[in-house]
Amino acid sequence: MLNIKVLGTGCAKCKALAKNVRQAVDRLGIEAQISKVSNLDDILTYVMVTPALVINEKVKVSGRVASPAEIERLIAEEK
Image 1 (tube, helix red, strand yellow):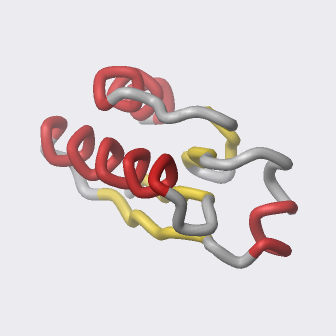
Image 2 (cartoon, rainbow, N blue to C red; image 1 turned 30 degrees about the horizontal axis):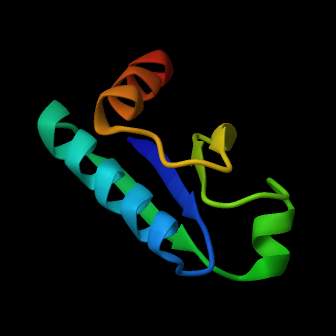
Image 3 (cartoon, rainbow, N blue to C red; image 1 turned 90 degrees about the vertical axis):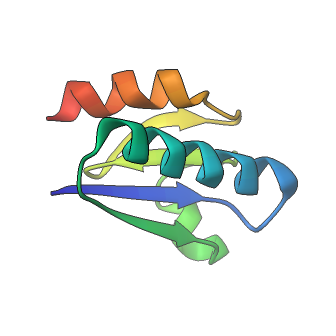
């Protein structure tokens, strides 16, 4: 099962990224553990800029909102 983390403090872009992640996972029909990381110390262990997307402990996107299609591609790279 994939481990997906959405890093952000709760801003609109962070929420949009979380929504796009859910949409991508649903469209792919896969099981994934999706978590939101909002603690600043935890975020800083991965990136300096949010929103960010981490898949299987690898930073895939930082500082922007990835589209559902891009997230699907990134997930496919990890399967």
